[in-house]
Amino acid sequence: MKKNLLLILIGIAFINGGCSYNNEDDQIVKPEIEEPEPDPIPEPLPAEYLVALKQPNSFILKPGENITIPVIKAFAVWKVYEEITKRQPSRNAIFSTTVLWQDEPGLISKVSLNENKKEYSVITVQAANKKGNAVITFKVDNEICWSWHIWVTDYDPDNQINGRTYTWDNNDDGIIDYVWMDRNLGAETNGNKLTKTDSLAACGLLYQWGRKDPLPGDRTFRYTTANEPPNFDSRPIYDMNGNVLPETGLEPGNGVYTLPTDADKTTPNLIKSINNPLVYLRGVDGAYSDWFASEFSDPDDTLWNREEGKGIFDPCPEGWRVPAYKNELHPWNGLAESATPYSRLGVFPYAGFRYTYNNGALKNSGFQTYLYTATVNKKANALCLTINEDYLGVIKPKSDVTTRSTALSIRCVRE
Image (cartoon, rainbow, N blue to C red; front, side):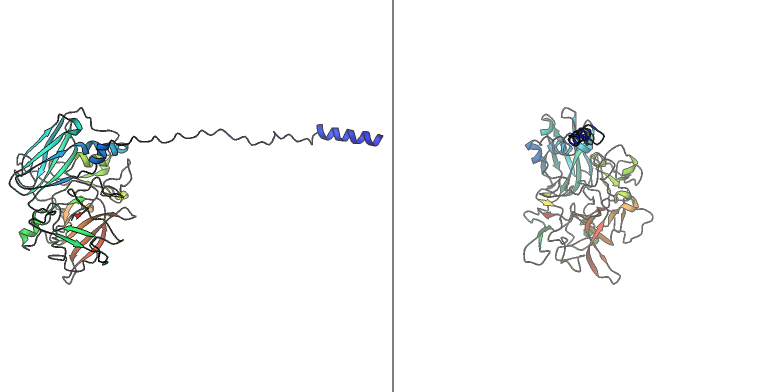
């Protein structure tokens, strides 16, 4: 009896004593975690904006003819890049248009804007009976919001009038990979006459990688690689009234001048490039000298080359584009020697370039040429073609790389 009572007392003590276990004592209490707000889904672009984004940034215009240009692309692009620009042109502002520059006085005889339809307005450009290049601007409240290159030429690559095109197989599989123009973008001739004057006229214009607006090339062939003194003496350009717009180097002016992108860190470089088509934007070294990258944005590899094809800022006329790598090879692969003065793809004049590390000064005209592709590498540099003579006088083109701020020639291919 005593034994049974003792067992009962021990059992009660075990239940109520210090060895008892409370399941709530060791529970892990998880703090309530607020689910992050999902990123807002951007509103889809209106259908007319999607169409406008595919419109070209340059137009081929025959001497004496006219063309109409819709301004809606300006509104579409600013909408696409609204996260960077933080603003859009006002549809209710005062619109205007002008000739920013032309490389032949009187090349554009008239430019006018029908501003009664807001973003659906159009610019009409009338060319004189001359040949050359011009840049037309669209202004909103006197600020340049977009611009177009007008290439006045009797060359018609679609019908091969006053020139020709070249087909090219870059991997030797018997399939045509490219159809090339026979001249650089903006060139007056294809250079086949092989004279000094003709070769200079065949040089065309120079472009920073990813920008749509051209810069004029050298005034004459320098036949030297010297960096000093910096050559800020490009081919003369003129305003609508025929006044010369001199190149001013590092000093602001009405012609071409260099603007280091880190000089103003309050404005996105994209806006600088759109507002100032004649400015050479020198990128900072830490950003691989990319004019686009800044505190506001990383490098943009799609400016000239998107997955679906031609980029929004591609400078070539409708139906044409800056060549991109294909078959994991550069576009000119197979073009061995003698690319200049004549090759299986025509003449490649020694146009030189504008050099990043010389503050955008002109360099190497008469000695060397570079031509851009729309492709970039993993180090954020742009891929290009270099053509020059070696120490034995042999002309050898080769695949190369350069910083995106450098301004090179462009040879367009059919889309």
